[in-house]
Amino acid sequence: MGYISDIRKKLGHDPIILTGAGVAVINEKNEILLGRRADNGYWAYPAGSMELAESFEECARREVREETGLLLGDLKLLMIRSGKNTYYEYPNQDKVYFAVLIYICFDYSGEMKIQEEEVIEQAFFPIGDLPDNLSPGTVIVIEKVKEYLEKMNKQQGSAKTMISGDDQETGLIRKASAEDISRIAEILVFVKRMNYRSIFQDDAVSFGEIRVLPVAEEYSDPEILKDIWVYKSEGIVKGLIRITDKEVVELYVDHFFQHQGIGAQLIEFAKEKHDVNCLWVLEKNTNAIRFYESHGFHITGNRKLEEGTAEYRVLMER
Image: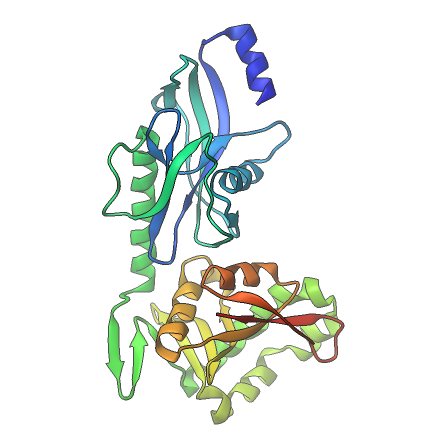
């Protein structure tokens, strides 16, 4: 970084405050991505210093992309590291105090690659089976990750497999029933408005046609309801997935419970228990595309118009 070099020319090795960002990237197995750094041999989460005019989130995304090749989706703030315990002296004797925002991310896509000038090797590790020689800062971040995952697991309940009749329910995922219809309708209406209003730009549809009561009436049809599974926790239906044959027809998680791994559990349930292999997604819904890519789906060459609109859906398969 040029401006850091300029500062060092004036201050030499004296301590400076270095702002930056890092990310605890977590896969579907709740493993954390670590890389062994070339400069000191420590295993660490991807992170780096902020460039001029860059936001913390932009810095986090860039550093992960440069170091790992991965493109990040939704980021949630995990912690802020600052103060005397962040002091570090580089092998070249440059001294710094860090002021760093650390994010956690479960939503990513792309193919991993190594930035060889900075990272020797990288891999996902189980939280309970980490490599030796972790950097001091990484030890602190991993403790925060453990707390975050424990809290998330308490919210979601047990993920043990249970048998119910001829079907298997994974954790709190079960067949939808008539008592779930009102929540199903609420989730569908409000998440569709949040996700699709900016794409279709048609408020007559978003607020006129997509309404809770008509949707509830539609989904009361036993032929539709029989294909729906819901994720229920703490007495609340928080997400749903509709599966027909081996196709995911729709998957939605209530806006207030997103980014807690519920969508990941639903799609993995569909893959494992129903062997789903395809789905259609709006071409402009890039967040959904990244999500499905992270779970093994890829875009094919097939496209079709969404009825009554100028927007396309694309077929994804695995």
